[in-house]
Image 1 (cartoon, helix red, strand yellow):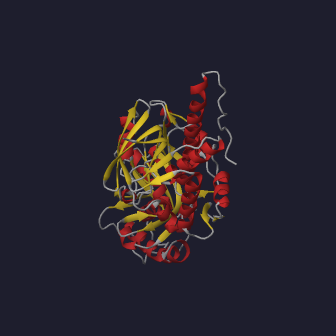
Image 2 (image 1 turned 180 degrees about the vertical axis):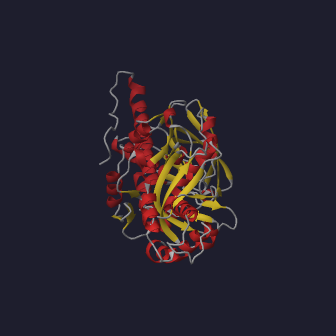
Image 3 (image 1 turned 90 degrees about the horizontal axis):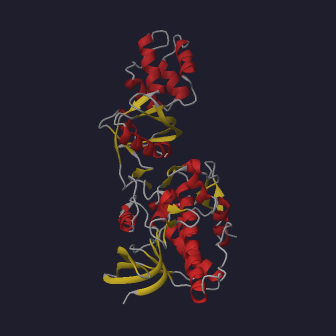
Length: 444
């Protein structure tokens, strides 16, 4: 016989743990404790939390808004984020004795710089609230049943079945598949009548053409402005930040942020390309004026000593086909134009990205228009909730995707608990019985 539960959460990542935690907390607030199960196929929980931020876990960002996300409409994303804010996140972890510190980038990290402290705080809070985590317990199939949902799983190499009144899908996407995010959650969503928008890696390093000179600068980082442009040269998506040269191509915060925009643009326009400015603080006119007035000064000296890292300056001169002994006085008009283009508008020959194995998040997923955002409940299948990366909302680098997980997980968990409590009160007493008030405010 299937094991019965009031709520089954599929996935024990950031969103799934938060959903189970808040479902259990809300059930207790309503004085109606429920059996809440969180199922996950991994032997070690929280892999993405543990590797985030270089093992420090950037829990969130000091300022989060819908403008930091892509995917579904800004209005839909905003309505989710405002239900569990950055202040709510900070307060939750502080109550679990995990204080957060703000770094110059705006990222919030635990003061201990230990991702393990973040994970332990969530796991302890989840268990204290009364939710039961079962792992390794890999869900293989979900289906509707007369009284809810039938969940087929494999637990410790043995078949297991669970019958749930409400189901929360928090399976993640496809990024970092070693953590258990293999995309199977999308199959579950489709089986329960949802659509899934095109998915692709986001926040992912980019691969350059083989033997491109930038690949020889592995380990060098610099500030740059980046822009995705259409084949027609129309400007599509700009960003600015640190770029890291690697043995395969380019990485670093600015590259990770621009990667999803390049992939999305190329899906519509194969001629879309990436343009890089290694001198983001200079306009073309300013740099042109500088070059025109160098006189007998070697251009290489100015670039290497005043403007750019030495190795980068040498490489860009080579890409512009400018001899390193060239002075301002001997620079021809064509050479000056070529150097301006190389320094300020270098077309970077990106061949591909490093795929889901190295991506931090998945772009695409279940559209938010298919959910009631006040509850994260499906508009297609009643009593089904979705949260986290399975939804079509992906943030830029810096803790934004964690904030999405906390907010959407909180909504899904509390709403599922409230719905079950309402049904339990209404069923024996008839439709006129007053239902407990839904939680419309942010958590205390």
